[in-house]
Amino acid sequence: MLILTCPCCGVTGEETEFHQGGEAHLKRFGPGSSDDDFHTYMFAKENPKGAHFERWRHNNGCGKWFIAARDTVTLEVYGTYPAQTHEPPQHIRDAITARRPGWTWREFA
Amino acid sequence: MKHYSAFAVAREALRYHMGWERAWASPEPKKKYDVIIVGAGGHGLATAYYLGKNFGVTNVAVLEKGWLGGGNTGRNTTIIRSNYLQDPSAAIYEKSRSLYETLSQDLNYNIMFSPRGVIMLAQTEHEVRGYQRTAHANALQGVRTEFISPARVKEIVPIINLDGPRYPVLGGLWQARGGTARHDAVAWGYARACSAMGMHIIQKCEVTGIRREGGRVTGVTTNRGDIACDKLGLVVAGHSGHLADMAGFRLPIESVALQALVSEPIKPCMDCVVMANTVHGYMSQSDKGEMVIGGGTDGYNNYTQRGSFHHIEETVRALIETFPMVARLKMLRQWGGIVDVTGDRSPILSKAPVDGIFINCGWGTGGFKAIPGSGWGFAELMAKGHSPLCDEFGLDRFYQGRFIDESVAAGVAH
Ligand SMILES: Cc1cc2nc3c(=O)[nH]c(=O)nc-3n(C[C@H](O)[C@H](O)[C@H](O)COP(=O)(O)OP(=O)(O)OC[C@H]3O[C@@H](n4cnc5c(N)ncnc54)[C@H](O)[C@@H]3O)c2cc1C
Ligand SMILES: [Zn+2]
Image (tube, rainbow over all chains, first blue to last red; front, side, top):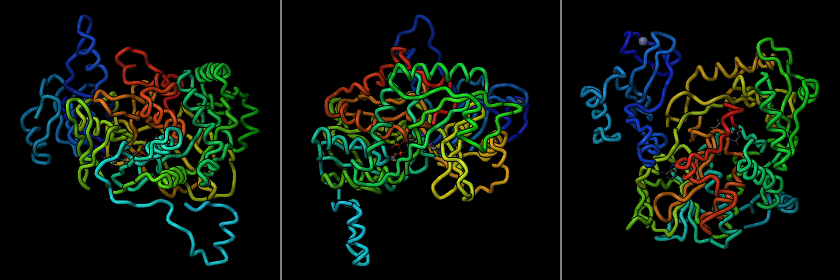
């Protein structure tokens, strides 16, 4: 069972309080973009075996969205941060590096 | 390979069962094969089998990082049905179901196919309409199903409670020739037949890299050395994204945990499979007497082969209203598998963006039933470059927005 801390209201709760909402840090491609860009944005998934960045919603709490860095192999949570952040904060990258030296996830490392 | 028969059992009985052979060989890998299949689950083994049987391609290796059938093939609840909505799905699942009918004879291995019938309960007005629609679609597709009344449901499943109160049973979609089979036996039977054709099944051989030259596959890197091939089939279910990453492309797939559990064995009480999709629970009774229970997938990407406890609780809670007797059962075991889920809940049987690589994945929560049909079609795709069973399931369908949407009627699609 996952334990997450909501960075919006500060509550720490187990996973039944939250809902996963897919990959984080997506760059959106809408009308006018190329078919390739739209296809990649819409369908190509990272689905990594290792460190992952996901959107979560505190749906049985404050209702707000945030981002969690989590490991899909060990289920360790590296940290959570507000949804308005455009890239993972350094301390979270460091926490991942400590466990998985040389990790990459899309353009992040 | 020695033929299994009643005569063989009698013969062996007379000599203290000393004459049985190993069912398949464990050879050392060769330097090169015409075809390498990664993943010795049901789909990988069936693909190899039909490559040999239908196309005479036998210089084939099936590489497996663990033991054969140890992935989802040995972890599923073995429901077999073909009552899907869309035409391409009905075609491949019905081909598969019909191959199951004679698979024990074809493989000379008892896979214990038991066409005991599958009911999908309609517990909301939406489901009533959805399943009536599916029954009509199935009639046009030549798949035999019917929409049945609550009274008929009660007749087939006496232990059911029709009244609700929250989700009364309003009818059901009944496929009389759906059922179950022994999951391990399916993997073992195909493995034995492949080995008999001279194919190499290599266990404890993990693929760690995919070698390419000028946009074409040349082989794989494994913990047992490099192995070359002309064609490579990736058939690794939950690990498909991971293998695609090794070959430099991404897939429209998320890997999540799906759990199942079994109760203590009890006397026979339900001789068909019942699925309750609105409440995410389904159940059948094994030959040993255990009630085999499954539910919906867990909610996030996961490679651990175990899931969250609250999903088990939700599944059991859901079943208790419809099957009050379940409340008195003790549960014995619980386990999880990592399933590969696509957005339209349909599989991918396709050429990959790298020449010479083919990918068979996305069966998600419901690919056991599809093993023979998928192997049949995917072998044709790998041998000839296209296959009527697979062509609609290409990766290009996402690019073209041509989905094969099987997610509408049932969130649970086992
Ligand atoms: C709990 C549960 C219940 C289910 N219930 C049903 C059901 O009732 N009916 C139904 O039709 N379906 C059901 N399914 C789905 C079904 O089990 C799968 O769709 C099907 O078994 C997939 O078969 P496969 O051969 O593609 O994958 P698998 O059997 O998972 O085989 C893939 C193999 O690839 C191997 N592999 C992975 N990575 C590597 C590597 N790098 N190198 C070498 N080998 C590798 C794995 O070890 C594995 O053995 C269920 C699944 C689960 C988990
Ligand atoms: Zn909150």
